Structures are given as structure tokens and as C-alpha cells.
Picture 1 (tube, rainbow, N blue to C red):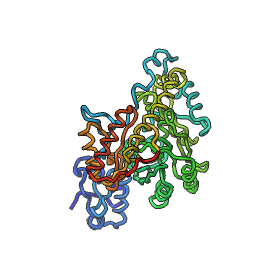
Picture 2 (picture 1 turned 135 degrees about the vertical axis):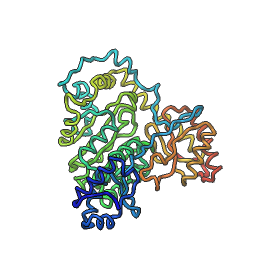
Picture 3 (picture 1 turned 30 degrees about the vertical axis):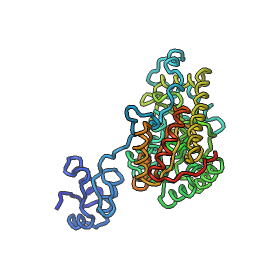
Picture 4 (picture 1 turned 120 degrees about the horizontal axis):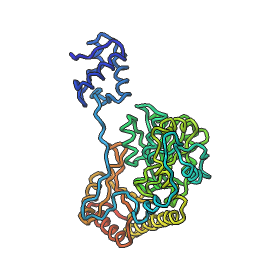
Length: 447
């Protein structure tokens, strides 16, 4: 016998919410079965079922299959593991600090005036930079500025979806995107990747079978795998989305300034709500937390309402710094050097691995690459044995959309590697493969 009360779905849901807030129902508490509570309250079972659906949609409860419905606990959000002391960092996903422009110099030299309440949310200088960044890819007439790519993804999702909606995301996936979806109460539909990025059948299944109302995709330099879409794959994905214009499409082009792969657009003209996000953190510096976002007009209006003048605009100091760095000849030369350096360092690792008969997934671009492994045990063994050889890498479970069915492998950050380290790492990984029984190619892999 519980103290839940009410004769309507709203009243029953409200009663349970109140009890959860008072601490009478702690996180993980299993609510009474629908049939049992309906009999106790003398209401139809559909009324209790509707109340439970309300609670799940609001994030107060979560379904647990045959175990029933439980009071929700605050979701744990994974963070990337930091390399231990004394290990060579091939794990952090960070850019090379020596390849970042001098932010201190930019702040001392840029044109900046005091910003007051009532001023425009986007500076003229950054508006001009954004127009150049998006030229030839999308109509840059409607630009918003957010506190980085993760903030942009969250704001765009919240502008179009409600709790309980399903989002299609790449699997493996950028860790922050998994956290954003979990924290906001959305469901996840994992879409497998191959050497050319998100798979066509995977996206179609996420929309038609799992009823995804949004898709988040990284068009190039995907984190964690480093793969990029080619023109044919982008065309095929566009064809799928063209049949579902109601699906929100978010393209997270986070490494646009330092990627060697060309941008391939997957958003068809028929899509009603879309966003193309380009942030600055990876090539101007992680502390420069802002992104420019091109969207359809309606989504831009919703974003603008949340970032409107006098409320929560992005710091004009950051906007001015980004605009300066993106137009200053010395800084833009540094960004171009970073692009070439990251491509060369990735090639060093790919070539070193190839000499030992090991291939990464696809043709890596950007800061990271991915090496598939057979199962969870070999992932754990590889990470541990590499650490004994003083190399830190990231295990695949961090990036799994479905933790019960991960794609097994390791992510290797190549952003700051040199040739000697690349050769030593490849040799050590080959030893690990042999020790744990992972087959390598008998001849060097051709690249």
C-alpha cells in the first residue's frame, strides 16, 4: 500500500513527483506495477500508464523493461580519462598548444569597445568572419553565436525536441554529445560508422525504426575515429534525409579551420530545421569557448530568443578575439600550419602502423585516429599493456552510444606526436597484438 493519490493521470503523476521531491521515493525506487496501483486507486490501468508516461517524459522516472518503472537518478556523464603521470599522451584529444595562435597578443592588439546592455548580441566583426566561414556552403544570413559547439548542439536540440524524443548519433560518438543527450532526457539511436563515416542503412534505420527526430553528424575529422564523409556518402545520406524533412539535422563541423578533408553537406534543401556549427576551440584554443551557428530562420529565431540582447549573449571580448585571430595574417598562417602539421602527424602514425600490418579506420583527419579491436577484453589488455610501455590511449567504452554493445577499439590522439614516438608506439602496439592474439597483416599494409 503506497500513499500515492489521484484519480487522473495528471494528479497521479503530480503525487509521485511531490513524493520524489520530498525524498519519500529515492532514485532507483521501483514504482508499483500499473495493475497494482490502478486497483489501489480504483482507476483504469490506462490512467496509471498515462501518468507513468508523463513522469518518464519529464525525466522524473525511467522505464526498466520487465523491472518496471523507477524514479530516475541523475545520469552519470563520463569524462575522458586523463593520462597518468609519466605516460606519453596519446589520449587527451587536445590540440598541440604550440600550434595555437597567441591569444594574449590578440587581446592586446584587437579592436574592442566596452559592451553594454542593449548592444547587439553578435559583433559586426564576428558576423563578417562567420559570413566568410560559411561562404559557399550555406546561406549565412542567419547566424547565432553560442558558448562553443557543445552549447550549440544542446540549444538547437532543445529548440526543436522534447524529453523522450530520439536522436540519431554516430557510434562511436563524441563523448560530450552522449552526455548532452542523456542529461536532456533524449533517447539515443546509435548509427554505425565505417571508413567513410555514418552509414546510410544505419541512418535510415534510426529514422524509420527508432523514429529519430534529430540527427547529429560530424562531416569531417570525426571524434573519436578521425573519419570524414566523402561526396558519395554525403549524397546518399542527403537522399535518406530528403524523405524525412521533419528530422532536425545538426552538422557539427568543429574542426573546420584545421581539417584537411573538404566539407560535405548532408542537409537537403527540403529539411525544415537544421544547423551547421563551426567552433573555434580546436584551432584557436580550448579557452576560446564560442561557435558560430548557421541555421534556418525559425531555429535562428528560437536561438536568438535564448541569447537575446541584454540576457545571455556570448562575451564580446571572446567574439572580438576570435574575429581578430581569424583575420590577422600571422594568426591565419598559424592555423594553416596547424592544418598541415596535423595531417602530417596523422600520416606518420598511419605509416608506422602499416609497417606492422595494422590499419586504423578509414583515412584519419584531424587530431585522432581509431584502431578496431576484437572485444572488450582485448581493449582492456591493449590499454594496460600500452601504459606499461608508457603510452596512454583512450578505450572505446567511453565513446559507446550503447554501453552494452560498443564498437571495440582504442582512440589515439596524434596531434602532438613526432616520428620517433609514432614508430615506437606502432612497434609497441604490434607487440600487444601478438601478445593477446590479435592477427596482423603478414605484409605491411599499403597506404
